[in-house]
Picture (cartoon, rainbow, N blue to C red):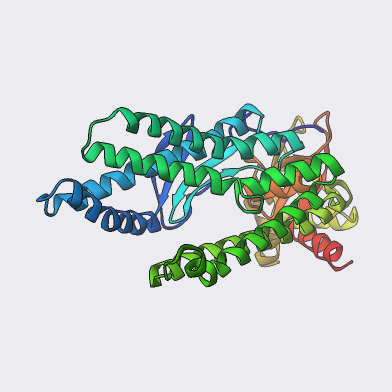
Length: 388
């Protein structure tokens, strides 16, 4: 399929607007690294939780024990960042665009453009994260064995344990965990059906959530300790996260099943090309005579200059239309407004989401104008497909 005229280099994608409540702290291999405001809450909780252990190891630190706890939280999240960066690097190597890496309350998230094209891509992008965490845990554990007693040894030991737990738990076969994506890739590879893989892995995530929510009921019989209020809150948050994430993944899979029927070419409106300085009233008259549903302004050599906005034409009073050029109600041909007429499915949705607009110019492989695609027509077609 021909690429859009505004395609990014392999492994890169157009920079998306930063989500509200996030702070950019830098970049890794050209990928923005963001931190949500919730991260500061969990960093404070880690600092408060780790402080008594520090006081036990090095008495008399006073307020500095909380500072040391915060430093440990930062180091711990640097290892989480390494986990997410491994996802991003492998995705880039396989040709996917990576928009950002975000650190948040429950860990991290790597935003990758589009769904995986092959089961093996899904497998390697997913599995590398937990393997990285396990490797960090093993390395930290080895360092812990040779360090002398002291605060640093305590911190390294906690870092080793945390990364081993993160790595192992992320391999649990249920979405939205990395292990769920591994399970999805295996089912996808065996059945040839990506959506079936998502549904199976989604149910794995739901069962994991139910098992987690049931843990406080069996904690005392198994371990001999009663669950605390903190245990109950944490279990509830994690269980809710797993259940909602798995449910959302299953819903998205059902939506993606309908996307292949969404093709740009049949949805295109017949297009009339006119000079940019033609009076708007005359351009509208010609479009009506030609039964064209859209107007594109062009240069003398036929190069597209802009797409006339239907909303802007409607808003223009009829008595003014003979006196204004059609270019005044046209949106200039910016990057992302030209799409291949053959574009379809998830690629089409992704292209529209990257560069939101009311209309897009569709072109053939040789550059000839095919027509104009209206976002309203895409939305209508999607709703009709969903209702079937």
